[in-house]
Structures are given as structure tokens and as C-alpha cells.
Image (cartoon, rainbow, N blue to C red; front, side, top):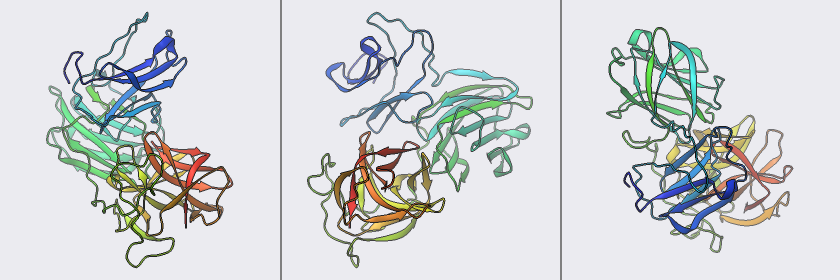
Length: 423
């Protein structure tokens, strides 16, 4: 709350207790909220990179280059965070490099400097004559797929969005005088389900926007200058105010279905099953939707870490029809395939049916399981769900693999223990 040790406060201990475990603590009191074993996570002989994120009461920490946190906790009574502090003790001294918001320079050289991102936004300030270049990538390297935003290019006359370093540019707009070598100019980049928006950091006005038809998980950003320009930068890796995040393109419908009574860890306030939607019976039907739309009677299969309901959905990908999850506020459904999470602005939502889930494991598909799609090889795919990182997330069950796959944090994750949806 302030630039001193005062309650309320969160503490994230990384490599404590002789470099054996990590914890999250609230208000300097025990018991710790979360404790996990992390042997050898720190090294006295080299720098180790980490990120800490706070969003909607969820505090989490992860390793640089990894989008999945290794520790996370959801505070039922969150508070606004205005300051960050660091310290060492108990026999340890440390050397720190705090990148978030630190000022640094880029030379007149078309070579990106990379850093990690953990949310779908990047706030930056740039001071230079022209050619402010930002890239968004799935790795800390200049590789495809990648998105590039060039602000104040072509001698400070126009700005563009480029995909995979290829022309023609996806968006081109005139921006004469956008940059100034004598003062910092602030911008905000936001990306959700392939939709990239570039906003003015002072007014929040959208300067450019483009939707990637084949979105990819973004884990890193890069910045550079060139073509006769040097630049000074201030980078904030996480959204902290200013322009508002992109709103959902359609309001979510009222939740009609949810976890059946007795489901362990069911979330408070969730409605009970009340029957099929009007005109819908049996195992339910699939309804075509786009851009975050939720049809009346959509089946709620779980909830996101933030508490937002996740609807049972499916989408086409690489010749397969794959069950996954609809996150209405992101404007798309997500499906797991090939080790990655894939956002789909066009999808189908399950409406009606019993919304009855039973626990199972491995390749044990109970009789009456509801088929939700098929793999590219024609194998039936069923609808499953698992608890992970504070969420109840729906995904696909592939019997030949013996797991339920979910999409989470940009990745495809497999779980041998899961629940399966019944007809």
C-alpha cells in the first residue's frame, strides 16, 4: 500500500529455508498461504530470472521464459498494490537486476533486446527521433511466428503492424511527429486471442489494431531501434492502469449450468443444474458462436483462476474437432493441441444436457461418456476437466493417450486423473 513494511502486504519467498522451498505469505503472518518444494531454484554463481504477477487477487511467481507459475495463491480479500520491495536475509546477500520500469538504451542497430511477459499487455515509454520497434514472440529470439509494431518509422511519418517479418504490412497508418527525441512518449500494447491493439498510453485511444487468424502463445517481447535512430526506453511488463483492457465483444449469458452438487471445490455462488435449455434435451447440442459470444443455456464446465465461468466449447484445428474452453472475456475459445494452447475466435458452445461429470483416470472411458469431437486421425475425443492452478478447466480426453488435455497459460497440459462429461 505504501513504500514501507505495512499491512496489508504480500511476500513471495523464493529459495528460502536453505534454497529448498518457496512460499507466499500475507501480512507477515503464518501459516504461509502456499508452500512448495523448490530445491536448488537459486544459484550463488549466476543470475536467475523470475517474474511476479498480481491480477484480480491472484498472486503468482514464475521463472523467466516460462508462462506457467510455479507458485500461486488467490486472495479472497485483495488490495491495491502500489509499491514493490526486495530484501535478503538469514545468511544470504543478493545482487538484483529489476527490469520492470528500468530505463535503458538501444543503439542504432536492428537487434532486439528481449524480456519475458506474463500477461497480455506491455506498457512502454520511448524517447527517440523515430523507429520505435517492438516484437512479440513465443521465445526470447527473433523467430517466426512473431508480431512487430513499428512506431514512428519512415522518418517519423507512419506506423505499422507486421506479421512474421513479411510485407505487405497488416496495418499501416500515418503518424507524423509521433516520436520526439526530447521527451518520452507512452504506449500500451494489448493482445487477446490474436487481437493485437496498440494504444496511446496517455489517452487510451487505439492507434492500430489487427486480428491474427492463427494466434500463437506470446511469452516474450523485444525492443530495438535502427535506421539512424537511438532510443531510451522504460518498460513495464504488466498492466498497471491507464488504458483499460479490451472489453469482451459480447456480454456473457447468465450461467445456467455448473458443477453438480457435491463436486469437490465447487465455487461459491454457482447455480445448480436446472434442466435443459428450452427446446433442448438429451446430451445437448452444439451452437456456432464467434468472438466471445455465449448462447443462452451454455454449459458451464468450470471456472478460470479469476472466477470467470468457463463454458464447454470445441473448435476445428488441423483437421480435428477439439473440445476445450470458452473464456468470454477473451473473445475466443481455447483448445489444446500439439503442446500449445490455441485461441479460436470461431467455435461451438455446448448447450443443454445433464452436465453430469464422473471421476476417472487414464484410458478408462466410462460407458455413456459424451463424445465431443475427434482427432485428426478420426479417434473420438471426449470432454474432460481438471483442477489446476486454482481453476477448473475443461479440455479433451484422448483414450489412446490415457490423459485429459487442457489448454492453460499458452500450453497443452496432460492429466491422468480427471472428470469426464456424461451423456
